[in-house]
Image (cartoon, rainbow, N blue to C red; front, side, top):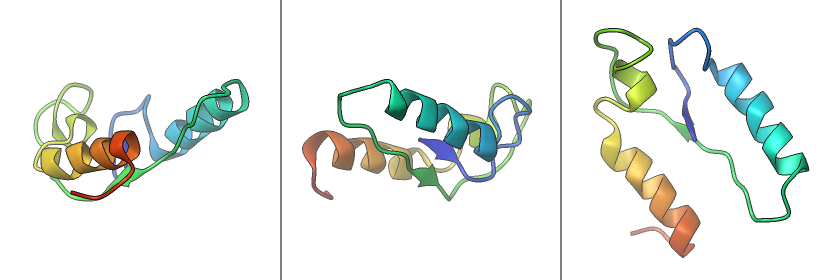
Amino acid sequence: MAHEKDTNTWTTPASSVALYEKIKSNNIAPVEFAYVHGGFDEGNPATSGRHMYAGSLDEAADLVYRFVVGTKR
């Protein structure tokens, strides 16, 4: 899971997808990739804002829930 507009320089959307692909190729367990879309920027982009799902915690939690349980709340 990553934010589609993460402004942190070391967790860009492209690098998140590349990391996911690497994990997927080396893992027999189920894996999925999802973008979080909502939220806002604030403070240091490495420790706050969209990088830490500011304003989109419910959306991020729902994505995790759907992956673990296999259904939408």
